[in-house]
Image 1 (tube, rainbow, N blue to C red):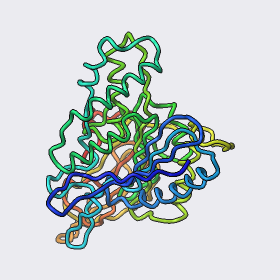
Image 2: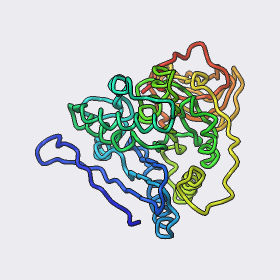
Image 3: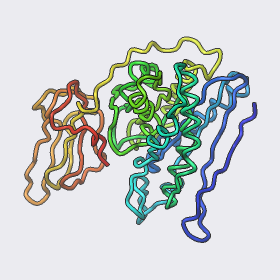
Image 4: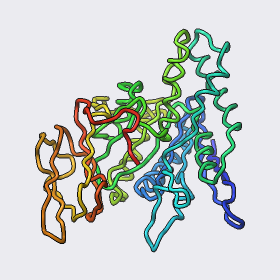
Length: 375
């Protein structure tokens, strides 16, 4: 079927300034599930923007060949507010400059109104319960009255995704290997996603704190299952945040490979006909509570002695901070065994800024549940 392009306007932040979202809606030639994929809700995470373009091209070719099933929504950019935020020539797309809010936190939490609407309406058939919950979600959303352009953006994105079977949020880090964040109840069923993308580190949490976009879509399901234990409610939305390496990994070949990985995952989930030789799902995962974040204790010049992806031993030195006034070099020491999967890209840092993330295997006593992502 022909690609449908929708232009969705946001409320004007001031006279003469109206921003919009572009939604590419692929409807397959046969019935099937619904997928939602968005790029760069952190608007300065550019690799996702390029991957979305390669994915658009591949989906168009599959659509022309009549090989798509169900419905796939692709947002080639998810944050027109952040795309336009520049300060003295530097793009700042992670936080809204007006209120300082993270563009990937604070999405609508409709658990209570949806739970209230479900009383007396659920039964013993899981598929019927899923349809009932999605209808309640769609009914509850218009009752939320966003007070700002940023809040309206978040509501609009959530309204497009809340009834999807698959929700993928494409991001990147400062510097990183490809990794993902996934809800614990979705694992190990989500190993196919990790395998198709080549995700080297997969981090699991039931609630990482802040109601990020992926968890706004997925966490509702296991919360409802806990509220209504007498009724079968599956984790009906596989939502994940995919970190497409680092912010400088903007490359046509990488983007093409990542888009192909996304298509292979969609094929395995019933969105694409005629694709075989899908990778075996052999990926492993770590609890997000097992990720240690090293923070700067002083201002300084940041240097690294070990590469991204290195397997670290506790006590191993992975870098240094050099004080330009005294020349003192403070070593950065791993506090846990694990893999160095992300690190800060800026080489001048201030006290308190995070420097490195190490994915271990066992939860760490100093990691607090409900505040696992940071800003």
